[in-house]
Image (tube, rainbow, N blue to C red; front, side, top):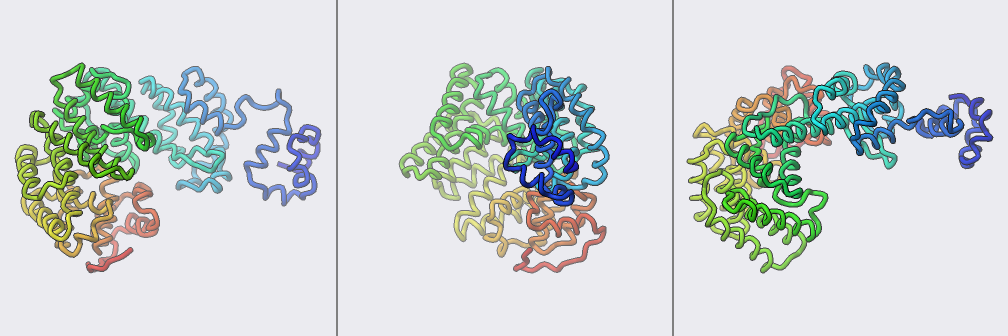
Length: 497
């Protein structure tokens, strides 16, 4: 934009008085140094209303279209895309990673196109029109993989991450509507966002159906997942995810009213289907979560104990027809302070009946790792036992949870690092199509000093490693995914990043 354009438009810029000294007095070079969004806004407001494009602020328009998900707006989206696409496609080869908000202003057309395409894809996916969404999805994946929505407060949303969530929600909702939940499976992960968004979509489908009181679909969802043993591509059990969803959504979880809403909804479920095993299990798991909520809010010991004991009492009348029974029982035993010799038989019985159900090992590890010296030693022995009985994948999932909970330093001196390496290898063999799992276990391998192992399991993951997992260590992730033969680093007990 040239200063001459602005000077000729001064009568129409009076509403932007604070900009006039800058724009009138500055030479061309200085005007070009202004933040791009300020220059764009000044140019926009220099035009009369009838000269402005219908949707000249593409980010604001995309935000509105995304929130409204109204098919009537598709025509407007297409008009906007026609306007922005030529410039966006010219920028596409240049943008090879997600950017900061400030840097993204220099590539605005690229991000505008991605934001509009996300709104268009979501609109179609929300109404189950997958075929119509495919062209927009393909453009995001092939031409705008690093596009972002850009908010005025400098918040950003990664377009591809949001897209993955909507794709999985669409698939799950369609399966519930058609009553074919027991026949679905998750595809191979296409990028680092697939795994986390599979979990989030499962969680939200469960709690939203509960809140809206759609008991028929909710019951089908639970039973279908239980019978099919559905897992995400990274080995997370959908059954554990939906049981864990029996609480308010994260953004609503700080008020008593939101907790009462969930409990009331579970009671309606039980009233409509008094013989439902999962309606009763859901209340027990809810009481476990509520006990934790009360503890975090500084609730009295009596209140916390009362909720958890009520959960244990409910469990006595629930049939043991699902691995979720054992998982929930161990959680409640742990929070009520039951001794290890009372918890262990529940775990052993559950493992005999459901040997592949990873949440059993994970929750047991969480219980014991926080149980002092004795508990940590037991936790290390469980890891050795799992690995020695061809359950290395379970051991790795247990280690993964302990590591990202921040408890790994407590058991690291007690575990054999060769056992940890074998478990990691077993997990990668069992779930080879998960970028998220490989990214997580790669970081664990680096932490224990097995950088060659990390490079081996993260091979071929260039630009597909989890950026949140490796935050602050991005240089290591780049080196591991780029180098075909990373250097061997001998293990030590004091390895640090």
